[in-house]
Length: 201
Ligand code: GLN
Image (tube, rainbow, N blue to C red; front, top):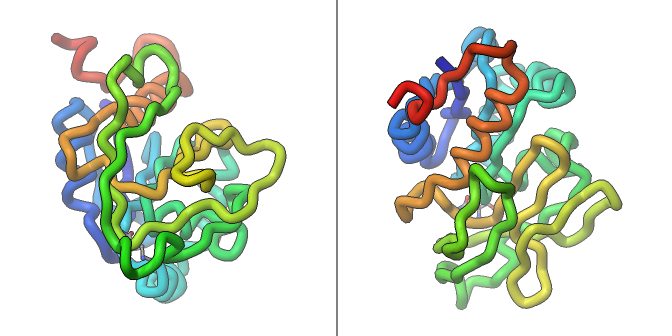
């Protein structure tokens, strides 16, 4: 079974765990270093990036998380998770995020976004994206694929097997991003081993 770690220091990790379990993966709550052992993919959820940064520091998780991503483990970061991956935080994604970028007056909004994620993970339907005090990508390097933007600001980016979005896919019944993550994890596993529920069905 595909084991997906969900960083659970703070934020809406439970909603991510539900989506992953529904897709037939095993969601592993990650609160300390030992929880990272043997995971096939990782989700960094939304929440509050300052609190999350403190938690990562307290638990000594920055280095093991960097090592994990450096080793090619697929990662999905959403909202504060995007911030945690950026140059100023874990520094594994070549972007600089701008916190609360859409301003207080538009703290929360919804958009329909086309998200090109490849055959298995994306459909023709746009993604219903809910933004909650969301960041945007202020600057990015050349290795970054911008998958979607709002008002000209990137809100979904990909760098290899790192997917980072400024919105919350986990609260709208959207599961294509988590599917993409599980697909990427399965693509790295030895042949014959798969944790994807639809294989068993
Ligand atoms: N505004 C939050 C932060 O900067 C992120 C919001 C979210 O994750 N929904 O940390």
